[in-house]
Length: 510
Picture 1: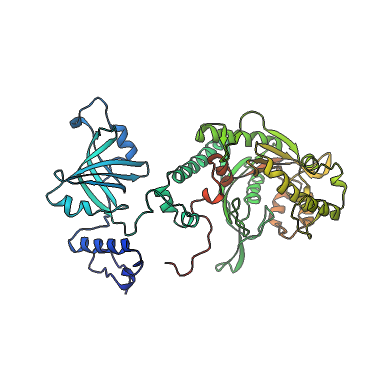
Picture 2: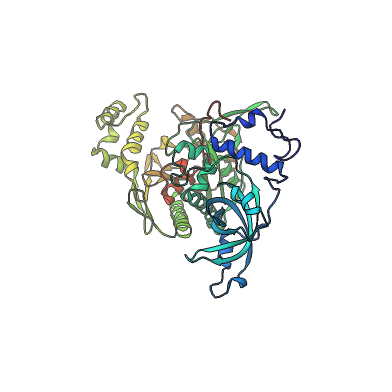
């Protein structure tokens, strides 16, 4: 027999052993189940199909007129979840919370139908969702409040909210039960509001500069555009293997070939790799490509984009880190060559003349943990990532990286060991790489073929065919939106910027 056939008060509803025992260890759950059953027996529907909400809490508060008497104040119908419940004999103060935040309501025995207050209202629970209709007034303490002429139980909450003062503090519960985190932690709610606004402003910035937003496939026959381990799936309809995309790049470049000179996409990217405070297997990227410019044109665009978002959403170009350090996004940003930073950090002008084994020994002598199987350039990049990148707190364009690190960029004219690339580092991590894009199909094919390392990109022959039709010179940039949110909101982990981060399922939990 099913657990729930129609609704909780329909004749088809049966409170089975599974229902009653779902969390019998929690006394409050059992009490609320009994309340639900009592409401149903008395003909009350605890799960309404709708609720007449005329105003949000924020809109209602704005309607209050300081110079008007109570009878002249607006009548509103608000709805939300009960988060505060103070019973004082014949009257109660409650706070209900909607998407705008909390609003106080004043409910008295005499304003409700006879018997309603004691029999039903006082038996409501924290977490229940109700609608309240009444006029606005201001209490002696100065709080704008709705004086309830009527109320409706809209949704009965069977499970209690986290304890009021402790809130939701366990990281695992915060990430697994984000819905509770957003109810009780206003800082989390604000962070995700900021995330939505940041993405909105990024779009606006690019639309105002004549970029076209496009959508490209998440399922791809070749996992290209980055060196990363993909998630693999199978198409039953096509009877072939597909990869969840690891980057947006190669399809966006096809749009340059098609004649769209300015394109961008904001979308999910998937990499079947580790989890850490900076990495999640599923994350959000902005990638954009502009014809007839190069990586220096991308510098100007990237700096302008980040400054615009910081000003419009955060309201400042000075961002305070949790440790109190101020990151200044104003003015000209530092530019430094990759090789110069390596030489400075190792205090060794001969670093790039050493053999692979010599570099390995020197890295280990600096207490940098390095896999002995790494290639020459990978050892150097370990030095950069572990010794240099964490120190780049203020905005820094790290330019001219080794060509082996990316096969999709133009070779530097006066140094054929590097490519015309920058990696923008802020807050001790890479935020956005950008290239002068390789548009020579002969060189591109050669660089694909020569790419080395454990996770080699497959040869995307269709992309190479597209290049052979001619792609204009272009600059391209990718920006990790989750990392930008960390920077701008002061979040401590990428998981704090993703509503529902990747987690291992709990076995035996319903």
